[in-house]
Structure formats: structure tokens, C-alpha cells
Image: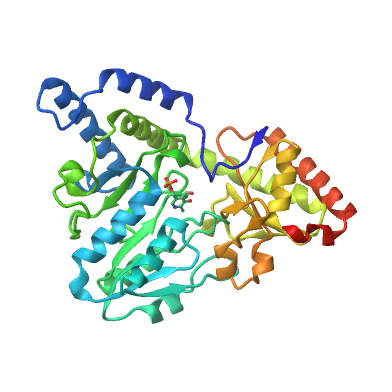
Length: 388
Ligand SMILES: Cc1ncc(COP(=O)(O)O)c(C=O)c1O
């Protein structure tokens, strides 16, 4: 099977697995325990906090460990808005966020907050003039993702950060897809809070980080919790954190080289597909400064993404539709809807995402496989696809 779904999750790399095994043997102590075994685990934990803070030019006091991207988003946003509620009742986000953010904002509306949902343009980016217009005196926080999980578009976080800083509005950004792929500097971009997930960067699943600028107030969601200064309850998983830190460091060391490889693979894939067919559109941005090159969103004009994805799977190629789906019932991509596409068009998306282990040969085979799928499509009567 060729795996081209690295944006969904990545396999743990062998060095990280080794780091995990060693850490599990050596640092099994509870970092909250006062004896030497606990103290050693705590020292290792604090070193990881410092090293991870260094990857975003942040302060170690702002690093909180969580179960991953979703929990980081939820806890960061809730903790920040509740601590700053006196400022008002208004929040801003986009309607192209990951479901963990989107569902939270829907819930917050039910709880009485007013939310402005910004749409994205044809390249997947928000319009900065729309964004400026959405700001209000009572806006507490804006949550705008960095890299889009469905099509890989990158938001202009520097411009967004500057505008929010001028208006003293808290800036949270979901960096789950962009972390380790492009440099992120919390100070330069005026980021108050961000989310990262270990399993997207060849680290273990079930661990992630939330960064909150130590100068920004937040309110614990768990009364009486002492772990992670009250940010998240539960004994901290030091071995997973050590493995996550090792993965993060390797990602940052290899970032530039990997980006060059990803750009090359993207070009090879897109050009190869163009030679086969003109029945698809490459979603996202043509300008690679505004795009994560390893995420390729493709809309096939003749069929739903789910059909293409399942057919690719039959031929041994693992890709994704980018959005949650169940057999026979694909939900439209929220990013595509936000771009102004119809519901039918928003169901045509598939997402191909490469990673460290992707080879040129695999891209060649991918082009051939998609070619076969498109050929079968031409043969069948499209009315047979109504069930999709
Ligand atoms: C942009 C984005 N945010 C958040 C998440 C959730 O991360 P996790 O799986 O660690 O909860 C994902 C996962 O796909 C994502 O792509």
C-alpha cells in the first residue's frame, strides 16, 4: 500500500520510537512526585518544555502539554475567552477551521457568544479587509488557523497578528498542519496562543502542545487541577513528551530539505496528472509561499471525492477526502464551501499528502493509479453513482 495521507497522521519514525522506549524505561516516575525518580522525570519534562518553546521562539512557561491538536484548540480558546470575558462577547474565526475549532465555536454560540465566521477566497485565504471589518470593540479573540488541513492553504498570520495586536485582541492559531513544515515565530507574528499535535510530525499519538504567551491571562477549565498549572488534568506522560520533543527537533532540523522535496513531489504529481486528464482542479494557492506543498487538494469534476478515494484504496493507494466521511454519505468540505463552491462541488475533493517516506517512484505509481480510476469512471454510467 502506498500511504499518501500524512496530513491525517504520520508513522512514528524509528529514532522517535527509540526515544520513547528509552524514556519509558528511564523516566517512568510521576513528575509531580517529590522523590528522586519523580524529580528526574520532572527535569526531563522541563527540558522538553524548553526545547519545544525554542522551536517557536517562545517562553518555556507558556508550554502546556495536552492530548493533541483538538484538545489544545479547545482548552486554549475556552481558557482565554473566559479569562477575558469582561472585554466583551464577540469572537472571530473562519469557516475553514478544523472541526475541533469549528464545533467549539458552534457550542460557544449556544452559550451566548457572538461569532463572526470569515470565508476564504479561491486560494483558501481570508480577505484581510473582511477581517478588519469584522473587528469590534467587544471582540475578545480571533482563532484563525495557520495551515489548512483540507487543501494546505496558509493564512497570512503575520498580517493577522499585527492587526489583532493593534486592536488588543487575543490571537489563537491552529498550527497543527504547519508546525515543523514552515517556521513559526510567536513573537514576530504576534501570536498569543497556538496548537500543535505530535502525531502529525512522526511523534506518538495522544500528545500535543498548547502555547500561551505567559503575559496573557487564561482561566483554568478544571477547578482544583494542579497538573500543567491547572491547564489540563492528569499525570503527565513524560515518555510521550520526550518522543514528541525528539520528533519536533528532527522536523525543524530537516525542514528546509523536506520542503524542497515536497515542492518537487508536488510538481511531479500535478504535472503528471495534467498529462492524463483535464478533468480536475488543483485546489489551494499557486503561490507556494501561501501553500503547504505537501498537501495537494484535488477536485475531480466527474465524481465525488469519496468514490475516487475508495477506488484508489482498491488499487493500493491511501489518500483521503480531507473531510469526515462515512460510506455512502460524504459531507462536503467546509473549506470548499467557504471558498464559495456548491455542496456538490465541495464533495469532489480528495487530499493527497506526502511525507518523509514518500518517494518519486510512489508518485509515479500514484499518477498511474489515478489514471486507472479515471478510466473506470469514464466507463460507468454516472447515474450509477447517485448513492454517493
Ligand atoms: C488543522 C488541524 N487542527 C487540529 C487537528 C486535530 O489534531 P489531533 O488529532 O491531535 O487532535 C487536526 C488533525 O487532523 C488538524 O488537521
